[in-house]
Image 1: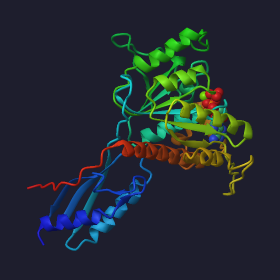
Image 2 (image 1 turned 90 degrees about the horizontal axis):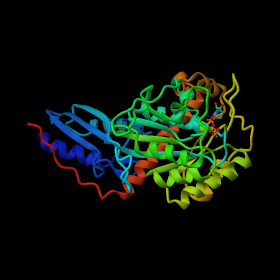
Image 3 (image 1 turned 90 degrees about the vertical axis):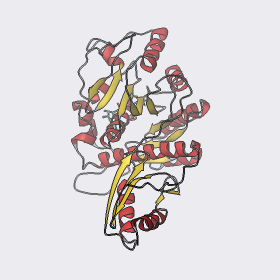
Length: 364
Ligand SMILES: Nc1ncnc2c1ncn2[C@@H]1O[C@H](COP(=O)(O)OP(=O)(O)OP(=O)(O)O)[C@@H](O)[C@H]1O
Ligand SMILES: [Mg+2]
């Protein structure tokens, strides 16, 4: 069999590999790139829509197994790559940012900032270019959680300024605009001005994902931001308690009212795993986050355990996802990042034109 014929058979086989989120085969989706077939030795790339794809390894193994089984194939080399798809921007701001993810909650103190930090880090650690905007102007906590000293941002041309950088993340926070320990005293219009600056004057460069940590509640700031920023999708954080769930529902309704797609619900401090036992202890009533997701027909992204090392990570400026890769909280945040990235890919796929069919790509 010639290499040309072999390639045709390989592509036919790859058409049986289905992306579980997009429910289409990877050839029709245009994911298979740069295939080379020489004397039965096969090399190609699979370009996913996010490096944080939760089934990346599974897809790679499936490709390797299926292609190896094609008659005439001697060796298979599959490289997994990713090109994050960009959301359509309705306004001419943040145009270098492919996806904007808002993290919100109705109630304060449910773990929004902790989720924002660890979600942003998880996306960054998967290989994506990520920024984090601390939009909690009155109670900025992101710099402390990431161990970033309070220094003024570096200015650029035309009133623009550069984000701080830490652990590979680009970070903007109102904390950098204040003298250490002295909180900003703001009146309404100044607050709006800062938000406007955050949206228009930051030199982010190219970003795959920008995570916005919103202040608690569903007041003016949240509404202004969700209307002005071209948000691709929102994550609503709740805890299992009834009071938190009621407020989370308000958050969900706010995003619905401004037509921002809901990526899903996260239930934080959902259960506790004590030392020396693997059992999940649901110390509060469980299942509320899931029920809320079902009520609004939106995804339930994940639950996150209550772990004291999460607090230590936040206090020391080293997020748990970096401090302890084996922590159950780290696993939950990594799962969350995969789910968020998948949901965004699904939103884009729904809007995209049908993918072009595979074109034979000949080397030599
Ligand atoms: N999964 C968790 N396990 C243990 N502690 C947690 C967890 N998530 C958050 N915390 C802790 O709960 C406290 C509140 O978290 P965080 O500041 O992230 O909440 P928030 O919703 O952003 O609060 P605010 O509404 O004030 O902005 C922090 O001390 C944080 O370390
Ligand atoms: Mg916060």
